[in-house]
Image 1 (cartoon, helix red, strand yellow):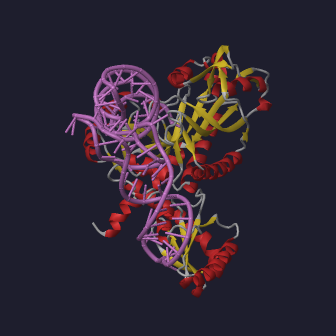
Image 2 (tube, helix red, strand yellow):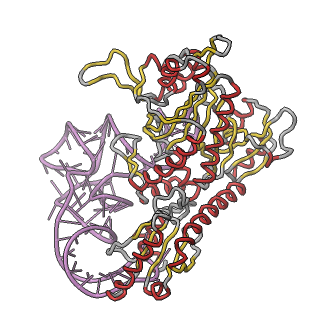
Image 3 (cartoon, chains in turn blue, orange):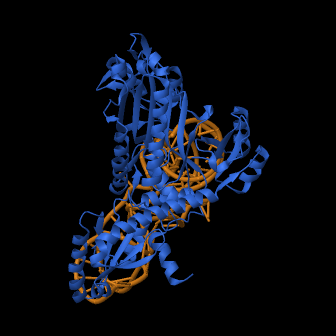
Length: 481
RNA sequence: CGGGGCGUGGCUCAGCCUGGUAGAGCACCUGGUUCGGGACCAGGGGGUCGGAGGUUCAAAUCCUCUCGCCCCGACCA
């Protein structure tokens, strides 16, 4: 082993993805300072860098949500047990993982209060009071909040006891409008994932076995992680009239007749951060898409002697001024680390672009940019920086999406029978498209023999033309998180 | 919830089998030299060995219980 490799192991050794992907994931989350374990089992602290990613996601997704006409609101975290229990399927689905408040101060409560695992119950309760006439519809609200599910197995970001998310809840006059809303939001999630997170996804319908408890139909977007396992990245539910009936949400239509509303709910959580990490990361660490990266470009100043420092420092200031607020820029002027050390650290943390500024660059009146996604280098004159850097960030964003899509497509196969699938999954992972007639028995058999589950029935089956026969759909199966 | 593994300075771990004065590397602090891919020298600080009980003259080490984390499976955003 060379001297360099030897030293490398000591300083910052990250497990290779190929050696142990799960371990790589946990290490990268902690070493990149995205999150850390909290004193309570299954709970995490989201550290400033990780929260910066979340804030960027929130900002971008929130804008897309509001563009559909939904408004933000806030409902309380505590839900009376009697309210939660009104919808039987819903309760049954969540019962094992609800956390309860049983005491206030030193007094036992008369009724237990659930810490929301999701807010259908309490929101429906309020909707039943607010909705009277068809003129009140549609009602479209969204809330950004925390939720709690007492999961047995937890993993940073992917499944934590407490998590952050947004949950949208809408009420409509008829099923067609509700269905439109469900699909509109699915499209919002798809475009958000692909355009902002650079994660290619399949948008589709869940099987009955995989749908949300209490929903008539669940839709999701499904992404493929670098280890070949699928991850449900966001969901959109058609709630039909189940909740409207048990929570008595009715309105008078134009004819004066009383009708139950048709509802939807849709959500995306901090799990998406896990999706970003596992869709793009490599053996060097994180790779963040520029649109959500808290730091889009980091300046690493380089100098040997004081004279050089005296030249480099003011030049770095000119770089900062040139870029203004066009780019989220960070200048790493820490004295105690060498440039090489900083390169590695910022690569680990997934900063999309590094700008090296040393004596040679100052002489040329340029900075040396290095991309995180492919290490491509490019010297950019100071006067071109304000134009070039934002463009370069767009190029990185697009290249990351293209790379992720190429990976996803390389890891998508087609099978026709369970036997073929069984053979396929012995050696490989990824998505497998098969003709599916909607049979739960087929689904169960595949799961038993391959470990893969039906991720979704793609809304757009055109990539698999001719695969599904009459009365059949294309089913996308994969082993999943 | 089953099966396996692990808890020892901030991090990665040695020490445990065979009980007897808590160690290493990295990180951190001070000073100096350094700086274009994880610098070097000198000096220094920091740990009730996850927690609780027990055995023993004596426990990081042996026993019991408990908490937490990781990995693999069954359930879920």
